[in-house]
Length: 403
Image (cartoon, rainbow, N blue to C red):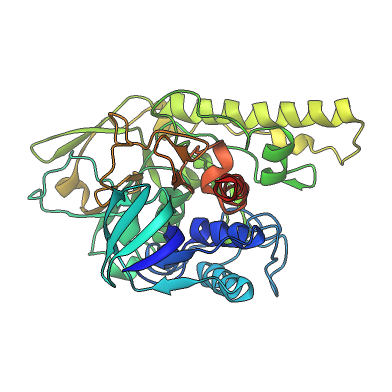
């Protein structure tokens, strides 16, 4: 039996941020990672993935991306290297290749059963992140005759079978994958749902800067079940705001939300035009708020009237496809870019609500000594991002040190 003061479960960005802040408080701890440091970045995404925010912003405040242009979008391999370098620099007490199979309360603390033996801890921090269990909606039957994978299993166009590809979900992941397939010469359909569409850059500033000064990173989840907001921006090819009109012009077939299946035919909601229009409205609202912020604060940045030029609604939205026979259309595969669910089957403590989400206040659970970090909207919209988890970890480390 090993005894530790604080056990951190997860060796990604959240676990490393917790380790760094506990070290600043001089508190002993141990980090357990079932695979390798930042494994989701290594093997949980496609080959050509890049960050959606620039390197000057998508990082910990304590370490920059050496050798990367601050305004460039780091590749996934460079991000893995960043976290490995960070772990070495802070001398994080991390043990990789160890899985926590069960966590229970044990007197005034906790008992973790692991593949490397039992560990008793006074405090436990769950840093397993928001991307735990890929979700594929039960729409198309498994025996429908098409390959179905989640975006987490997609790697590159060569792995996909012959024929067209339907990508369901038009956030950053879905759009980047659909665009890559289109550039590879595939016939691509993209199912577009509601989304935010901030400008990737406006008046000389990156969208992450604007969302910061406008207070949008600090926003709370508006309603239960809306913790995930689809943001249609992409760091690929130098960074861009997703323009569904441009994708349609290049030959991508846009459809509305995927709704149901009936004898080989997939049906879509008649909401494509409304979804694109709402994304346009969000885009223009950010420009309006940005202009107002500069005026109110006396900041002089170059004006950019061309940013407000939005083309006509694509024909696919005006004359939407509402049903599609996949076999007749030649579609051989479907990629579901439909998000993730939480998976706390190993955490056998009564601390979850009826939706399976941990009950907490800024990551401090109702069970003394049990904490959560890295979750979407843990304290605000930024919580699941690299820079946001740093701030949440600082708060939790202070709470642990105060015990």
